[in-house]
Length: 262
Length: 276
Image (cartoon, rainbow over all chains, first blue to last red; front, side, top):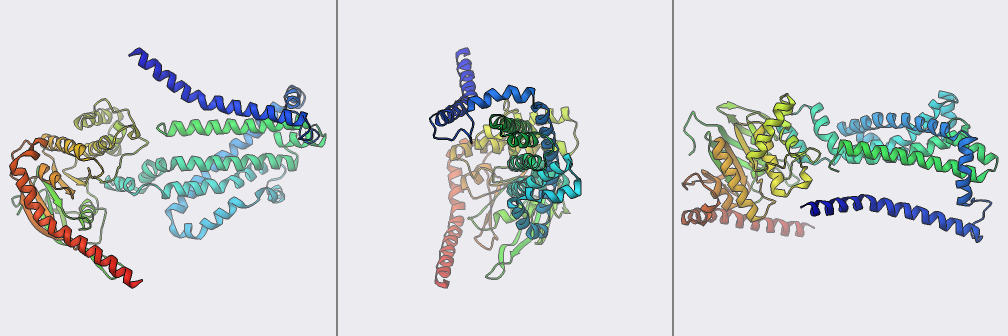
């Protein structure tokens, strides 16, 4: 019996660690490959620095460029943008689901918004919100809004009719139907939308920080690029990737907490 | 034919339902009348497309705009009613809730305190034979187990009438027979008034006190067969000679209707083909 338990524990552990190990090995493999390609001259080292140089630059940008503080700044902006995205995007998606006319009128516009280069509208946001973190947050929010709305709408629309009928048979009020059936049924799709929204928000937040030379990692990348300090620039980009990983991990945990069976 | 006057749990009187379609109005159910007595198990059987599910939705209150009257204990109802609990043909458990949380759902809606509702839900989980599975999610269960969760959830709302629409349709024959046993056992234990919509002959005879046979489109009541098999029953009953006679008797009526249904479907397809 204990042998069976041990085998099953081993199987669970390998199922959990397997993908992570493969992922890490792939990343290391790609980095080593880039290092080799640069060293043998296939990739120009004046455009792409050696990965070993980037790693070597990390202590320097931590100590001299205050990267951790800037990382925290970008994370804070992303956090506010994602909260706004979740609250507004889910509410608007629910509104489009509830009112068919509104949906017919707006769905195409919302889809078009997803393709719009919001970041190019930064002068307008600067006029409205000034050269501040609010501008950066609002651009991130506007850029990530469309996928959250569309995926929320998709999740609600795809809720199986029989689940809605169960709710009706128990005489749920519309609010109860939304809270107890529609929303939990749509959660997987909503989280897909949130992740997409976060990607758009992240790109735009760092992009605007870069463009208006204000705030966190984007501003740092701007400054380092101006100095043509390529290893440090790429090092700072690594922190942007780290911010994405942290947020994806948080949303993944949140989803598993809300839908533990998924 | 039916329960004695004044003791009826459910009355269905002159129910008709018409739908608008491209080819003009279609009558799905036409002048259906019957009743179900307290504690009685009645099945409605008919060929596919005879309007059984329409009738299920009308009685359950999910479809409005019909002619006729549905009454619970003599009082006319419109829309969904707390006395009627519905079990659906499709898999209808909430995948994000555990078995016990699924079953506790109606109790949660009634505001029963958490501890009490979980205790009561556990007792219904045990009643449908799923003791020990309370903290599993539906995705971890088989189709038959999930359907038992749906039945337990409906029973937890303590309906006076249990209305089931082909709840075992998606299951294999053996599971269907064994689940039939379970339903019989529960029905006999709770003296639960039950109306079962089905297209399965053996299921109808195995479980019912009366079987109502419907015609193919438009769905009308063709015949009522009283099943005089002894109770308590279980799936052993299917091997008895009397069971076979009932099945043969109902099949005679059903075969006519099913053949007519197939012929009409074929001629509709041919007409559509010519129209093109």
